[in-house]
Length: 432
Image (cartoon, rainbow, N blue to C red; front, side, top):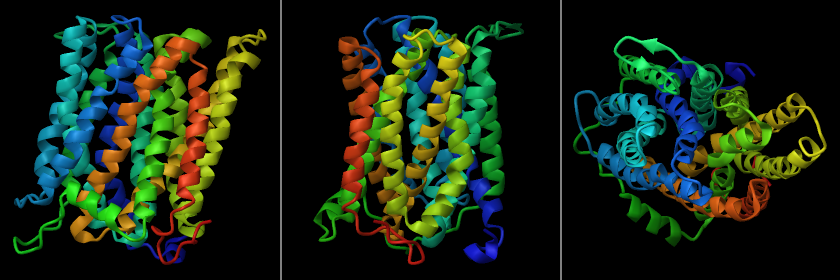
């Protein structure tokens, strides 16, 4: 589809890619964090429920900090903009603390937890202003495409982290100043890349200056009250649906690396390739999913994706039985599981690429930042609730049960999404 057919502004993709540099930094940190923090925690803890509980620290901090810092940036007025001052402080600090995280993980549980807390203090403070840069600068009708582009940037970073850097967990070098790099190299290299991306973001993205007389934006709690008070409950249904599909995702995500290590026999470095398959799919289909939604509607695209993910999770549940237990080779078992993760990533990208634009479509300029915070209140609440619950299920009945939980909750999310009546662009399909 060419630019004329889409009606995209001149330089749309170039400018949006520059905006996506912020998502690149998050995409680099998130998969490595989710893959290896549980592995480091397993060195101190035997209970999967306890590991799941510790894995909610970042989500609890996100629930608090993203709305708070995004709201503060809404009201900031500086020479370099309102988002950039927060980004320039928090992202470099995140890079340094991320690089040091493995060393803390090989010291003691107390030191590691302190490292996790301080790292997430800065990373989650950066996330809201980074996300809010896009709807501040991209018109409503182009946000599915724009979200596809910036999610593609996050996907590139996830591929770099999981396919290029994760295998370096198995590489041992002795470097000047740093010393023994065992289990540290992916985090150290990521720290350098995050600083470079921050510099490039600041150099290329210039925020629109706002006057002091512009009306203040709504606070998050006010926006939540207003959303639930509306006669049309479409925004409420979007939020409940995304809470459910994020719960389904986080039911299995923190335990995926442990699963492939324990059940498929992969090393720590090779285990990163599992989520790498997910990242490659997300990268490849982020932009197309925005274009598809522009044609058939965001709601229909999301519902198709949710049903597909439920089916794939069901196949994951039976995978270990039909491969490992029946004596299949490790290559076949790993290859087929990676294929399922790839497919899951395709549809996960389709749902997430279109959910933010769907909610933003129901907001106005004065409520944009607050709606961004509301989105994260619901998505991060899911990430807090799900890991400890599924960790307890793993302790009771084993790893495979998490895939059934994921499938069931995805179906519930699809049913709720079916009640949504708004959130489409005027040129998109109406959904169904």
